[in-house]
Length: 185
Length: 178
Image (cartoon, rainbow over all chains, first blue to last red; front, side):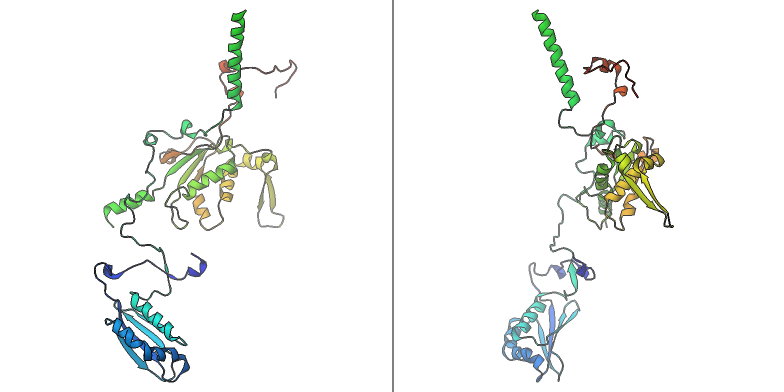
């Protein structure tokens, strides 16, 4: 998460009523395309209405599409969802393809997802089978009966033989050799 | 939240109390070790925004061992804020004034300077000797392993063992042991 995301509203991935499991209900209820008949900023929108709009409406019978011509105002795509949310998209200077793309986006989503950051990019209904971790997991049961501070548990792990131990071993060997020599005599 | 989930939450975020014996240990290396427990860095649930740090009791802080000639060379700076208020204290001087201070400062400086640091330090309990109040010692459920083995002093060893150990040389008769 970078600093620019700090003031975005945090959100999780959600679907209303397990949508898409078994049956799918399109969450887009209504779309209003606002445009001007003469202004240049609405040109792409007008082209879209002339050529692609009929196809879009035929392919999505569950969405009500309204057209609202108004003089010398910038083109707007206003989407209304089943959960009551509305979303405005400023379609100024959009090309015909861009308008179609935005319409597909609002048709495929369940609510306005702009201005949020996703806390997690994954969603699962069963986050853990084993259950959450606790500090008591895999804890040595011997620790329950020890009294602290415990000298034995406190001692550092020493991997190599210390010089003292090596010297003592050499000394022992020397003693044995001396004994053997004496016996040989 | 059901009763089971509530207990699960308590268990996951339970604060564990650790104890660490600082006898003959390097305080600066120990600080790195203690920091991990204080901040909860060893936990799989660790996240800088969740409060999962543990308590650490450090005993025998008077018995720490500084590496090399750091007792005489390491300097602690303090400024009172008034003109001429600067003081430079050597490590051995600071240690005689307060045997807890060197270890406290080592842990404090070992952590990143953010708003959380002072709250994390509240969970560190340092004692100059092995006398820990019973109400604190009762919480302890884990011992942190020391970093280095404690060397045995000749005058603390069993005289029988000393007698049977190899002797490399004898002191001259006029040698004065200080």
